[in-house]
Amino acid sequence: MFSRLFGGLMISGVLVLAFSSVGCNQPAQKTDDTKKDIPKGGPHDGWWCQEHGVPEEICSLCLPPSEVKKRFKDTGDWCKIHERAQSQCFQCDPSKYKKFEDMHVAKMGHKPERPPEDEFKK
Image (tube, rainbow, N blue to C red):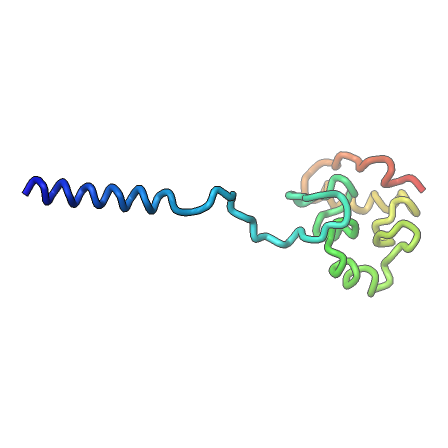
């Protein structure tokens, strides 16, 4: 009886060891493609695109090119000089930033940190 119990435990132990070592050492890959094809700026995780001074969901510099075409270029909201939505082109008209700053205040209760100055330079 002891040998039968010991044999069963031995087989169970070998199986547990075998199955626990199966697999690869590669980290799991993320399957979230929502931020794919970001032309500039890198990944963003929040509501606000700090680098460009607009909400991320409408940032014409961070959205995938197909979305930029559909939302901005095809509707005529495009600055050909600065390659961004005309409505977000602070280089052509720095006063446009106020609209987005006000959106941030309304949602977050405070002004956002101002984007880098090269977002406003011509």
